[in-house]
Image (cartoon, rainbow over all chains, first blue to last red; front, side, top):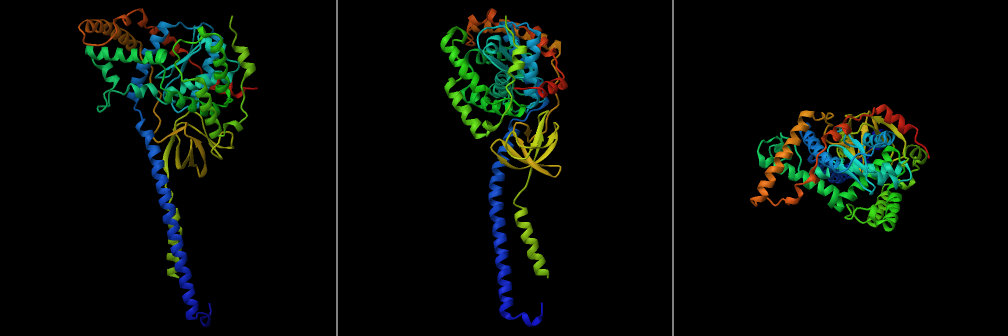
Length: 296
Length: 159
């Protein structure tokens, strides 16, 4: 720049402009740092929450042992419905959901129970049961996926694991059931048996807490979408089960193990809207369902 | 010139320092990097279990992540801040027997304890209602399906 243009006034304007720009960008940086830090802290807090749920291999093994005993009780009470084609079909749908879930460290297993009432159960460690009655009330594969996804969600969200504090033997701070299983004392074995009793009672009679059911419905909807199934399936199925229960009371267990249907349907509608799931056009699998599901 | 360079450095440094990422790990067997925080949006990348991502933002049930110089969104179902674990080993038959026996021993202990008033277990529950069928559970566990079969199964879903 020619020296004769660098008047004192120009230099003053130039310096003032530079200073203003400096203040502007520093303040902008502080503002975004602060809000990003606040959001970041919040985000870190939410991410850290995952660490509270973090497992060790020992924790997983303890969970499987507990879930296996619960499953042995369920299969001691109800026999398996013998239909190889249906078993493979239910397992394929269930495994497809499991592949998109957050817990690949456990193997999910699916069994149809020979019972005409409408219900499904999930035990820690990946054991999932659905009654013949529940499948008879379905009209397409996405409804089967919806019910299985709900049960998968109880396991991925560790509802029973958290309630009964199931931890591996290497956790010296938290008294865990695995410690009891590993112990040779009679009182430890009694405590383990009581915990299994309480867990089975929860599954078959009492049911999960309302918050756990709503939580599972939410995760199930996301899981359905991630796997590629129509997300309206759960609402459709619940409405139909409600109609059936009003007609044939004997097909519904005397003590309901789920929150009132109308509340669940309302909650599902809200979650679907919030997540933008209503825009998705995903298949229901009607034809394939009819090919595989044929009851005498 | 030096002044200008210094100011330029400050200008660049301030907003860049505002964003720092967290490492997240892919937990699912199948997960996707999507172009926006919504199922059905364009798939930018397919992940394998264990892949590391840098999460820079969270929005509802989605994380905005950086992966292989691509920025996109991943469902919170698929990721976690702790690394994934190996597949758990199945319980050996010996362990099943141990649990079955521990149950029988526990039942007799609990009956005795109940008689002494040491526990509040309802004695009527120590009954046939507590039958255990570990053999049936083992059949359930032994029933295996290949991942390839599952993927092929989902590839042909219609209507």
